[in-house]
Length: 339
Image 1 (spheres, one colour):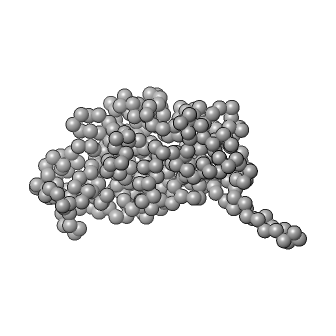
Image 2 (cartoon, helix red, strand yellow; image 1 turned 45 degrees about the vertical axis):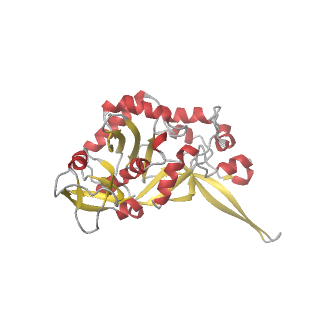
Image 3 (spheres, helix red, strand yellow; image 1 turned 90 degrees about the vertical axis):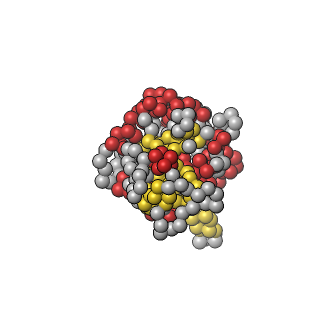
């Protein structure tokens, strides 16, 4: 059985194995043992902290095969973007140029560097092994952290954002970076993202142009790359779009990938999930529906995918093995939502 749980320092070697295979652009999952160790340490401290509002906390989850102990995925949440350093994006805007004398009225697409999304919660560090990409376990890896948000709303902001990795070719070159960022830094896209993963995005972002960039002046390849999704990030994009996230307003300042945004209360998993009491017994096999199910705990948070023949308004029947994995007993409530 695959279960999502908070990462522990004992997972470090396995997490580094996952990070080594993550695509270029996932700077929140660097292939560096020191940064990953700091990430897990910060997560453990966040889970242990008493929190009444969203601050600098970060929560890092892993997807574990309980039979082998092997990790097959990971994902995370930052409680607040821009808490310790600015969170930059390019805002899509339209400038209007008008000349009454010449009777010319033009609308021009521009990109403006901003930190509008500062203070929102941020979904980060998504990775799932390739054989699981098209399975329900990708949903578990992405959406179960939203069940955590639903259970502990005081720890998160009223809105959630996520940066989707943008397009780069097999050589690691990004048309958008080559047209914009590379003019300010003598390095290619892969080198820039690696440096950001090891240090911080802010020091590079602060050297980006702070005046509007007129999109029609960019090469066609860069314009076409704006808003495009890296093939290996498509599953993340698809899941979150089904969750009700919106695009088109912001893009990533390095690769031009879309930055998604949603009101926390309107996200499907959060809005449609329900707290339901547990009844121990044998589950009927077949004829049910797949659900994401999580317990209501904090440091011992657990979430799984399971087929249930559940009727809204009634308790949910879990067998002993499933209840044991979730760490719940009869009468205790779990949070569930249909896949």
